[in-house]
Length: 422
Ligand SMILES: Nc1nc2c(ncn2[C@@H]2O[C@H](COP(=O)(O)OP(=O)(O)OP(=O)(O)O)[C@@H](O)[C@H]2O)c(=O)[nH]1
Image 1 (cartoon, rainbow, N blue to C red):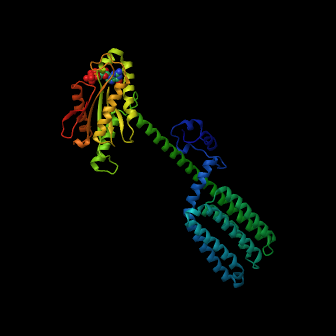
Image 2: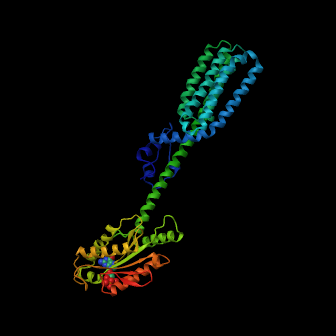
């Protein structure tokens, strides 16, 4: 996996070299001038920018409400006849502002926030055009300035996506120009001044928003790339971890992995952790006269024999926490967590029997004509303080099983004495 797919890489300007570089940084990413990202990323970005803009929107809306109230105060000072005409559009704009504020507070309605903010901006702009045309006053052309204000609001306060802001700005400017054309109060000089001022406001705020959104998109892409690298590193770590703890030949857990797991289980037992098993039973087995097997059939055949013998406990172990480990050359450990000591002994005897039943010829064995194993069994109920002590007890039992003739199961009983099972 790479940080970005080829398609995503091409459209965001990431070079082929960078795609194959396991760790390209966010600075390697170049955005196209039109800012568009591939569809899936674009959707994620919308979500990301919507949430980041929603945080600041509520204070911006409060500011707008305050400005609207101030505007009404000024209008009442200019003349009560002016206020008589403005209060309705002002109140309506205040209500839309209140509605947007409510949407800000509810995360589940957040997808409606941006359309609502667009409605608010159009309300402000169109009410300005209406008042500029309707009010009979020498200063009425000032109302037309609500259009550039609405664009500034969209781009700097609400941070709506650049493309929607441009389209909205064009529509609002069109409406404003049409309103000015039909307005009878203002002079051509006032028209020209107003248009120039509006264009200056609108172009500067759109340019500012373009620069801001470029930066925001780059930031988003950097985070996206970093997030993917974190995922890749996590998976790679997991693979390495399993490779470091699995024996390549038999597929059993290796000695290092066994010690880690056994110590962990013992740690849980000692802590009386709710996840701790009731007890840990450990079976240590060793192939009888394996040196002679190698000497008779050769080392590669010895390897095959190890694979076949280890496949027996691997097929028998069922519970999630139980495992089979290759302890050393031809010695294997089985850890059972859900079994009573008796069950563990039954398991050991069944395993010894199944290996014998495999019928792998072993003419060098002095105990049988086929490959056999000897097993030592111990349990945490026997007082072993830790995994190492438990292993030592099983080793002691195995040693005695060997001494008693091999191809048998011996156990370390709870009194610390070895008993022969078979
Ligand atoms: N083929 C093969 N042989 C191995 C491997 N690891 C260890 N061995 C051999 O296993 C043999 C173990 O021999 P010993 O420890 O003397 O034990 P044994 O011959 O099985 O005798 P007992 O355990 O007393 O029955 C040695 O000859 C090792 O070379 C391996 O990965 N592959």
